[in-house]
Each structure stands twice: as structure tokens, then as C-alpha cells.
Amino acid sequence: MNLPTDIANQALDAVGIDVSLGDLEDGTRPAQVCLRAYRQCLMQLLRAAHWDFARKTAPLTLLADATTNTPNVGTLVPVPWLYEYAYPIDCMKARFVPWNPLQNPGAPAGNIALPQVPLSPGLGQQPPTGQRLRPARFTVATDFNYPPIQGQVTWEVQGVSPQGRTVVLTNVKQAQLVYTALMLYPSVWDPLFRAAMVAYLASEVALPLSKDKKFGLQLRAEQIKIAKEKITQARITDGNEGWYTTSHIPDWMTARNTGGVAGYGGGGLGALDGSPGVLGYVWDAIGFADNSAY
Image 1: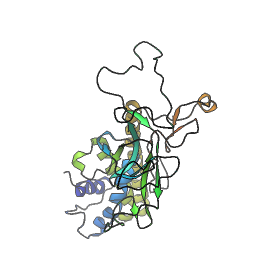
Image 2: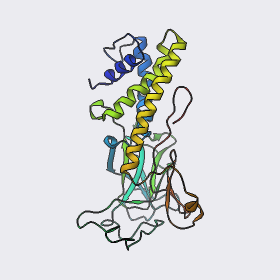
Image 3: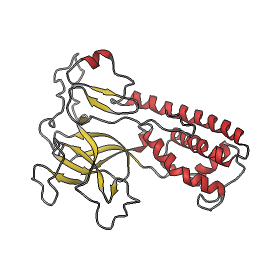
Image 4: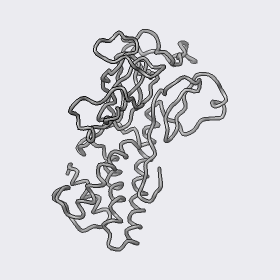
């Protein structure tokens, strides 16, 4: 019960399609409709919340070093950044770049200095062992100076094309990226994500596979509602566990011209002091077949 075909069959059950697929690629009409929608639903849903099971931390591949201190890499990096890294091919959503003070003495250029004195006893103090994950500024962009590796099938690899590639720009040396990874196997999904994926896929296939289109529209609306409820639950969990999300920017924060961060439901985190880059990205809005976004 942990194959993509099983997810598709659950979606068909949810909208009352009396078909049981033996294989998602068996060529039947229901299979074709599910197959066309499956991967896009999966990718969009992964970007719709910071799902814990999909969190991945990995070192980035260096493409260029503006300091010219790294041999065998380029030196062209967009100003004002020092390092340029390849975007991970399995990255669905970049979350943040950790700063490791053991590797990088001093805060990265452009970062807001965190207060060293806690406001109250015990607050803000470093734990006796281990270190906090402090975010560094970065941005995701496209660079045309570094074409993909020769022989790479650019149509199939995320972040590369004959025109250029998607990159991560930061001032952190030997950077890592914390991101939402492409999780293809339902066996590693959590129950909330699986339920949301079934409902989301069901909402996409309900109308094309319903003989009664009016009834199909009703089924689609019901499944969209279920999917939104599951995504809401995931975002609430994210808000309770993460440092990077907030629903709005208070007026007092907007008015200040000092360091700080503010999260946007569908955008990201940015500094209010005008420094380049962001400290992290939050979840994206997700589009549905009824033209609504959530």
C-alpha cells in the first residue's frame, strides 16, 4: 500500500471512480489522467508547507568563488555575493542556509548581529553542548555563466537548462542548505501528507473522469476542501515548531529601520534593513483546479 499506484487508487476511491489500477502506467484512461496530474500534485504539495519528513540538510556544490581562493571553480559571482552554489536537483523548496561559526569566524557579511546579552536570565544563552542553527543571508537565482554538465539531460534535471542553471548565492563558505526534498516514496510520507496528497490528486482527476460533470464539480470542491484542511494542519504544526513563520508584518516592525525578519505566508523572509538576500523561505501558496490558491 505504499506505491504511487496505491495513492492513485485511493484518489479514485475518494471521487467514486469504480476502477482499480494495477499500474499507474497501464495506459487506461483513469491511469493516464492520474499519471498526468500525479507528479505536479506531489511537487506543489511539498512546497505548500515545511513538512518535517521532507526536511533535508545537504552540502552545496560550489560553482564559483569571488575571492578566487578556491581552485578549479569559476570566479564570476553576482554582486554582492562571495560564493555561488548549484541548486540541489532534489530541492523542492529552499528553507535556509545555516551558518557554522566553527567553519566561518564572524557573522557572514550582511547578516544582522544577534544580541549577546539575554533579555532575561536563561534566555538566548548558548546550550552547554551543540550549537544553534543560525541562518545566513542567501538568495536563489539563475546564472547564465555556468552551463550544465556536459551530457546532462537538461529536460529532466531540475534547475538546469541550456541557457543556464538555478543557483544559491550566499557569503557562507562551505555552505549547506536546509530544504524540502523531493520525496517520491509514499512509504516515508507522514499520514497527514498522504491524506493531503490523496485529496489533492482526487480534486485534479474528479472532473475529467466523471461522466456527470456537474457531479464531478461537486466532488472536486469536496476534495479541495479536504486538501486545504490537511495543509492548514501542516502549516500550524510548522508555525509551532519553526522560527521562520509569521502570518503578517506588524505596523511597528514595518516602521522600524533596524534589523529583523518578517515572514509572509506565500513569500519568504527578508530583512528590514535593506541588506540583500533573505534569512529563509517559507511555504508557497498552492493552486487548485477551481482556480483558487491557498
